[in-house]
Length: 186
Image (tube, rainbow, N blue to C red; front, side, top):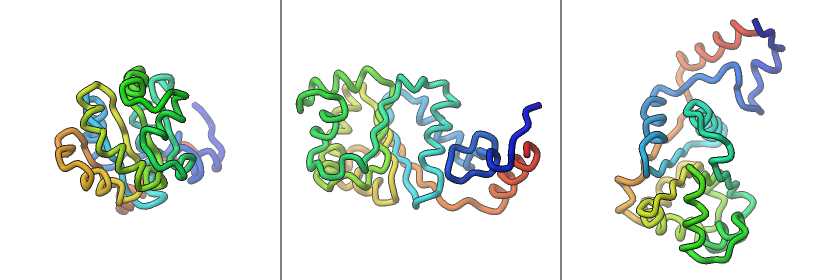
């Protein structure tokens, strides 16, 4: 039996290795990750566990970190073009075809803190998601609630190609389960 310190069990600043409790719609989220070609949008208020949920889902499905391109939107907030953001991340020219070929080398391209990207970058990425879907590049967009609206406002045809999930503050039974799982291990 592994013995954990209290700080390992209840640490809101790190991935909850011991106390992760999936949200009630986790089976649907997991299914979206498993569905070939689907883009996924995970939105919600700060601190609701969006990044934790995506990280857990990837681990749960056995997706290797080498098969994920993880982009933090905060780092590229001053760039006005989505293609330019991806070109910078990939060290490639600003060419859609070349960028697409590089994106296809990983299973998922994740843009965390999407809401921090410039309006121009968000709009361009949103408009290109349908083409990336058709070319076999998959995106997971993580951001505050406006992130899903940013995508659908740019391309209404994206609907069937993107599964949006809004993460909200969890209810009392969820909180009790997290506490109980931590208490059993502390």
